Length: 380
Ligand SMILES: Cc1ncc(COP(=O)(O)O)c(C=O)c1O
Image (tube, rainbow, N blue to C red):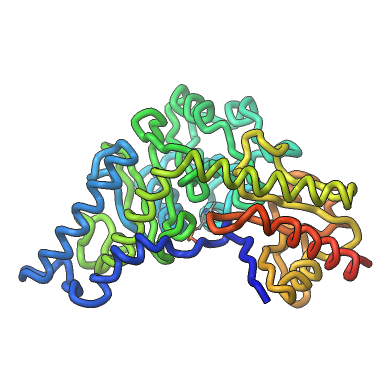
C-alpha cells in the first residue's frame, strides 16, 4: 500500500543533495573544529564557508549568524538573551498564535514577573497592527512574531510590523521557521533584529537551526561552555547539521517560485475537491491564494474528533497532523484554533495537511476520497 506523507509543516525529508554534502562528515571528516590539527582545521573551514554561503543568501554578515540546535533554541535565545541584557524593560508583545517555542518562553518570563501582551488575531489569524502599536510603551522590551503560522498558514504583514517596531525603537524577533522556500529572505531589506530558522522545515537535517542577530545588538548567552561560535554559543559544533542546513537552504532559495506554485496547486486542488463533496468543511486561516503558506491546509470537519480522523487516515498510510493538543485524557483544540474561533471550534475536528516537494497532483483524487471515506466512517 502506498504511503502518502502530508505533514511537511512538522518536518520534511532530507534533500538528497544535502545528504550527499553531509556524507563525508559522517566518515572521513570527523575532526573537532576546535582542534588545532589538520583534521580539525578542515571542519572549521567547512563551517566558515557554510556560514559565508548562507550569509550571502540571506544578505547579512557571517558574523550575524549563529548555529543552534533548531528553531526552539534560537527563539529561546533571542527572547531570554535579550531580556537578560535589558532588565529595565519588562513587557513583551507576542501574538496568541505563536509557536510554543515563543509562548512557553514568554510564560517562563511571566513567572519571573514580566508582563506579556498576547495580541488577539482575527478569524484568519492576522494581528491588528493598531493593537500592536497601542500595546507599546516605554517598558516594552521586544516584539516577537511568527511570520508564517505552522498550523493555519497565516503569513503576517511582517514589513509593516517591522516598521511599527522601528518607529517605536522596539526590537523585533521574527520566527521565520516556516518561511524558507516560500519567500526570499533579504535581511538588509527586512531589517529584522533577530530571526530564527530551523533546517528540518526546509529539507535539511533535524537538530540544527540558526539565530540571526543584527550587528550591534547585544544578547546574553543561553548556553555556556567551550566558547564556540566566537564565545556566543558553546558546544562542539554540529558540523554535519551545519553542512546539511546550508545546502538545503541554498537549494530552497533556487526553487522558491516553482516550489510555491507546486504547493499552491496541490493545496487548492485538494481543498476544492473536498469542498465539493463535503460543503460543510471549513478552511482555517486566510483564503486560498492570499497571504498564506501555500502548502498548509488546516481543515475543520463537523462532528468528528481530530484524532479519530487523523488516526483513520494513518491506517490508510496517509500521514497528517491534528489541530489539537491531545493526550489520553485531554483532547482540546490547539491554542491557534482557539485564537481564531472561540465558538464553533468545539464541535469540529481539525486536521492539518501540509504538502511538500514529492507530493503529486495526480494523487489528490485518491487522497480526497480517503479523507471523505474516513470522515464518513468516523463521524459521530
Ligand atoms: C513556526 C515554528 N517555530 C518554531 C519551531 C521549532 O523549531 P524546531 O523544531 O527546530 O525546534 C517550529 C517547529 O515546529 C515551527 O513550526
